[in-house]
Amino acid sequence: MVLIRIVTAVTLCPALDNDGDGYTVAQGDCNDNNSSIHPGAVDICGDGIDQDCTGSDCPIQTDAFLDVKNDFHITQRISIDGTYVGDVKPGQTVTFSISAGSHTLKACDNITGCLTKSMYIEAGGRGVWTIFDS
Image 1 (tube, rainbow, N blue to C red):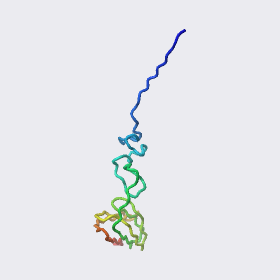
Image 2 (cartoon, rainbow, N blue to C red):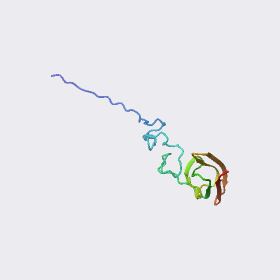
Image 3 (tube, rainbow, N blue to C red):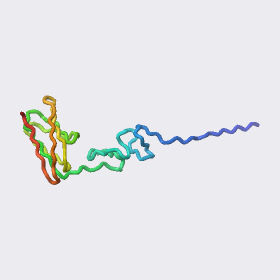
Image 4 (cartoon, rainbow, N blue to C red):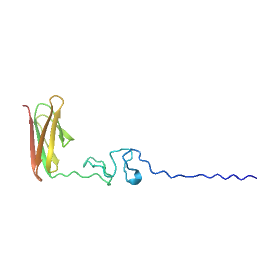
């Protein structure tokens, strides 16, 4: 009688980094299918996504206001510090809640292009930007 013994060697592989961001699930990556989401990533506050894997999205700090009035004849797409925040139609004024401090404002349309303005708004303050035909 011949006795055959099968020995299986198990090699433990380190956890895989599926999205190539340098972090694995074992290292705290809360979405290993998206390379912009990992511990230490910049969290975009208020977008509902926990980019830095702290367990929740950071809240938007809103201690100032910006009124954008569109006296232009075309709807303007408004961005604050590079983030699209909404459209302002002709004749409309829209108020945005923002953090106090220095901001770069941009109003764009598909006919005339973009206007850019820098503005500082103090805590509890209100900035006003009127976009008009020149």
